[in-house]
Amino acid sequence: MAPPKFSTMSKPKFAYLLLKEHPYGREMLMQILSEGFIPELIIEEDSAIADEEREKFLKRIEGNPIAPPIQEQAAEHGIRVISVPIHKSPEVMPHLEGMDLDLIVFGGTRIIRGEILDFPSEGVVNSHPGLLPECRGSASPAWSVYHDIPIGSSTHFCDNGIDTGELLMRREIQVKRGATYEDLCYQTLVLAGVLMKEALMAYEEGRWSEIRRPQGKGEHPTFRNAPEEVLEVVRQKLRDQTYAHYSD
Image (cartoon, rainbow, N blue to C red; front, top):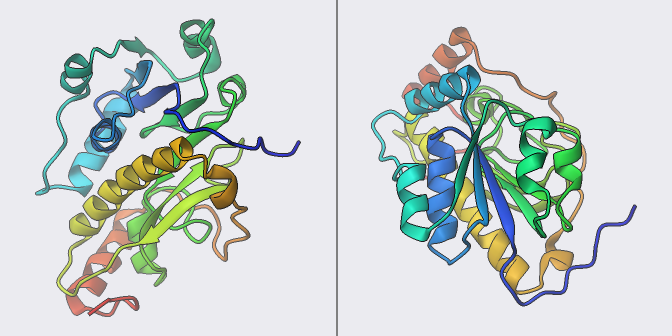
């Protein structure tokens, strides 16, 4: 089926999904709220996986600032927050039924497939802390350094694959000599939020049909979480400044 033709000059009505208090989702929410993009509803997954992923990301960005908690941001803007045990259709769809949503925005979730992806009229969008299609999957900054892939973030539509949907935006970060792995994780996290904000601005301006494009094929398989031996190589390359894509 051909993608819808977007022609709007209004802000989208959308729901925002994230793992409970995930730093990635907190940053993205702060970014989009700063431009007046206010979700109709926030649905957090409160689970052991959410706790594990939150702690994993907090460690990855250790030493860098974290956006305000979801509950605090939501209260400031009068946004209702719902908690579910898992972001699967039987748990989420009852909260969406009757809502006339243009979009669903993912702000750091597990892989979500099925009915949720088909519900909003104009799609589900996600920001990924890696360049697509070159770096799909988990721990993108680590695998980017390990394989000498440029580092950045991408905003894309969600389909039933892993980070395979059509692109809206992607941008490289400028990697400076002396940057640590934690710095790179933080920079891609912030950029992912910025790109989602800019993508929603483009939606409001009616430009999605102009910027939406296929990803194409990547050279690498979908990455899984980087094991410690990979992280050791990454940190050593950054210490030795042998990563191939420094900007200075």
